[in-house]
Image (tube, rainbow, N blue to C red; front, side, top):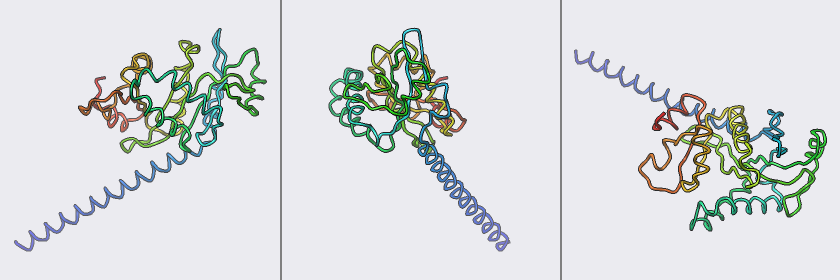
Length: 261
């Protein structure tokens, strides 16, 4: 009887070890897959090439052309433009935190991991001319180049959040005069398409609580949710919320599980 009990105990121990080995193998395989997904996404030279209809956006009083970019190849005029637009749009929302945050954003924008969509305003030019100019344009200090005037940009990255591959929107910034024309929504729809095409499981971003216009834009117009990993969902007091939109079950359960639907 004792021998039988020992044999049974040994079988259970062996089964537990096998389960642990399987679990470790699955975890390592998952990490490897996620790493490969991120690397493939980062290696894309021009994500916009998969969405040619999103190269242009036009309304009755606005015509723009979109182009991709990387943080480690930004020209000095474009860097200056980004800094100026961030200050104009974000200083009030950050309040006394802005001087420190501005330095952080300045470091972030030139990272090799930073990906951009630049928006140029074009006047009285047909699509063929815009396509030609897109291949050979040089900026001056005012953010004006052969393609037109730079009026908006998106800074995003492919990264990992809670072991989920995500496209993280660091910045969506538009000049005041081109706001309210549907351009912001157009850019976010494009971002979501790029995320899904790149096999990201979600789009994630942060919004300052004081920026009520942006909060309303993401929450009500685009239906983004406050993530379960946002500080407020963990009982922490901060000046921002982490918002997300998930594309698969795992991302929804991990990133959206605590949000009232």
